[in-house]
Length: 244
Image 1 (cartoon, rainbow, N blue to C red):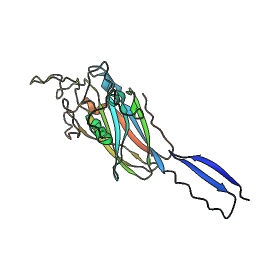
Image 2 (cartoon, rainbow, N blue to C red; image 1 turned 90 degrees about the horizontal axis):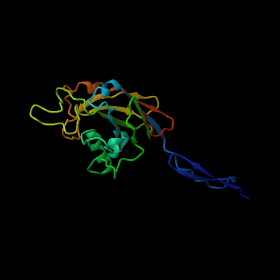
Image 3 (cartoon, rainbow, N blue to C red; image 1 turned 45 degrees about the vertical axis):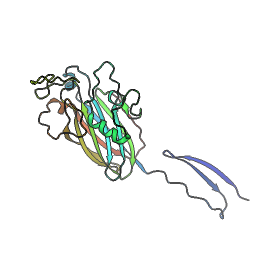
Image 4 (cartoon, rainbow, N blue to C red; image 1 turned 90 degrees about the vertical axis):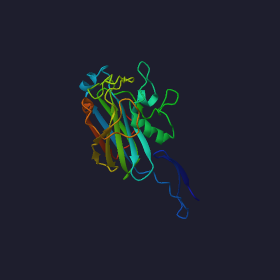
């Protein structure tokens, strides 16, 4: 007589039904493999003295996203709420806040416009605007390689190169000041690996653009908005985690 027991195992995003039979002649099908994943953790420390010296003293908008080096996999790790939800209540709607992330988000989602109040980015990636520090994590396949990007912008940080009103009479209608700057780095998803990105380029004060301009000479205080950016890889389970 055969004695059988049924167990339900819950894996990473997968429920597996395994039949265990105490009969040497019984055929037992092998369970599906649980995806072999690791966690990428992003830690960003802000310099509050820089953004507090801007015209309004508000903390910056931030976005973190990744592109696989070997596939078409595109992922947003985190984006601050105003940009990710199109929530500009009490502020001037700013299409030039994080334009490179918006262009990436359009590629990722097949859309053609920034997120709006009616069609926001997923709650899993939006976060409160951090004042001191931002942490975000996400799971990726072990051994995969990624290009990652961090875009940051604080409004009202006017300078000689990016004034509120140019000599030609062009007004900064978004209150943008120095435009967003973009950092870029690479990391392999192997436990123990760490990475720090390089400053890659800037966008435009007045017009949204999908690719940064490499000329960083006009950028002054915006280069000091972020004290540090560290990306690390661990083998433990992780979830999206952002905060001030």
